[in-house]
Length: 403
Image 1: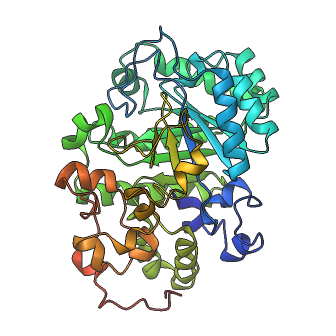
Image 2: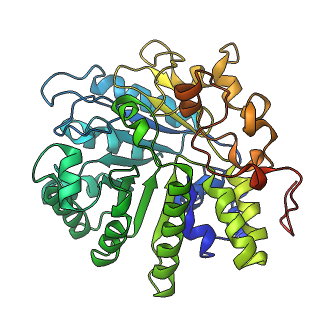
């Protein structure tokens, strides 16, 4: 993820991360992306069940009725291993995690073991009582997904009224003092909704929003043809930058991030080269700390059935199952071919990625998209929108602290 507000508006300096020796166990959450040890944040898709039917669901969710494959006791054993391994954050996702009655019990257990617990939810099941319960167990953050205004959102979610229920969920979190933010996945059917989301952030006093680029996976693979082209992506990123700056200039220090396209980092740096060269040098240093795509390195995923993946979007490759072997053992197994390679992507990427001057701060972007389009895990990411001229090693850095 790229912290747009942190980098573009100067809300974070390189010294802020260095103060904590960039160790994931000591870094506050807003600096975690700059850790050097990269113990994985783990996304646990704890259920496949969901009360909505989103067209872009990467988990290919199923009906809310049914039984989950991992029990509460097994979930606690997984948490014990993750905590001992040093994973700083456990993100409970789905499906819809709130359909599991033991969510708060498991979140409480994670926090008792020293982990930060967060959830990714559609927000429709967060009553005032549930928000109070989540606050009471020490949940750090609730990310609620929206796809635009009411008409667009309800069309994406395929359930009328889901927008209003999500907004009520946000208000319930706020009423209980629980940090809540928005998640928005960009594609051709809703890119025009970006200003709507910024307005919601301002009007509802929401402190954080994450803009996700489309990843071709799950039901989202059907939307691959609806991903923005490179020119459209640049325009949307520029719009996000402009809107973030406008909020900052009004004294509204919102946290704005983009996720799942690490070309955003170099693109932001290139823009700052023109606008504020001194800040550009500081941003380049922070991007080097970030190190780009973290699939299989700084982020991992456990599926509803226990399978371990490099991230929550890329399920074509499984490295083991936590019901048979601890996550910590799977994650550090050097005999697995692909997983160790993902921890050093720069040695394996091909095409434009292999010769890109930004490889050290992007790490080749998303392997899932490369495989989906070219059938090759190590091919260039088709969603990279930087031009050949921009990525050329022959270009000068003009004062950036690159190495």
